[in-house]
Amino acid sequence: MSALEAWEDAPRAKTIDGCPPPHDLNADACCLSAIMIDEFNLDRVAQYLRPGSFYSSAHGYMFEGMLALREQGTAIDNSTLMTWLRDRGRLKMIGGSGYITE
Image 1 (cartoon, rainbow, N blue to C red):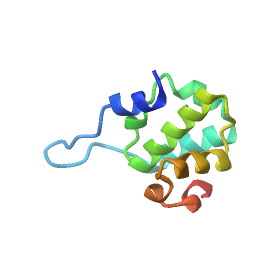
Image 2 (image 1 turned 90 degrees about the horizontal axis):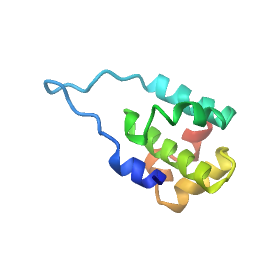
Image 3 (image 1 turned 45 degrees about the vertical axis):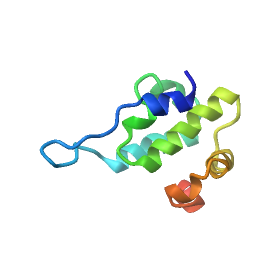
Image 4 (image 1 turned 60 degrees about the vertical axis):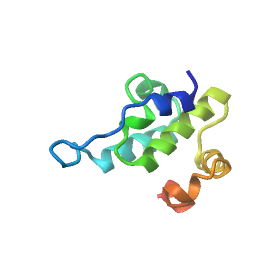
């Protein structure tokens, strides 16, 4: 399954009695940061997470990019992820390159 197929098939967060489900944006960011520090962490979490697992769509797009880069055999770093997102018109959607380098 490609990263795009995983993104399309991933469950989306729904509301519970009109409220968002429990979430932790910092935990999402920590997971993505761990992958950026050591891309082999992606192998550890990919069996449990999908792009739709992240509460923030920005984090989901970033995770989708990381999965796609891994499939292509490309190193996962700030530069390659920014390029991947920019080429798909998603870099601005996540808040620009500054969001990735935070």
